[in-house]
Image (cartoon, rainbow, N blue to C red; front, side, top):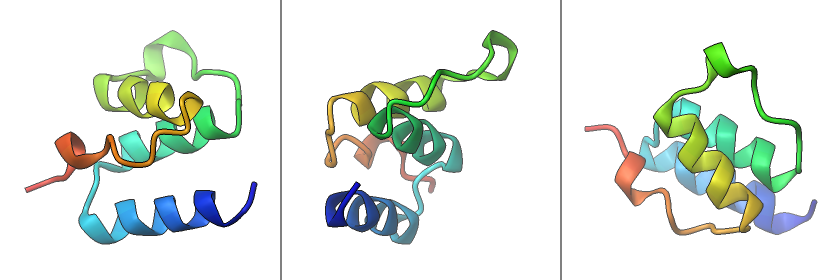
Length: 65
């Protein structure tokens, strides 16, 4: 896993990113199976896709206001 994972999660949490995005990102980063269809939303899907890509900078659009 490494420091990249922990630093990315910490930065997202401190920035106020939607928790669904963070959960998706973590799942994708760790290559966990996707959630069941009824529990998936847009934020989760975006986070999962970015996590699979190891993209640590795609979360700005998901910061809550």
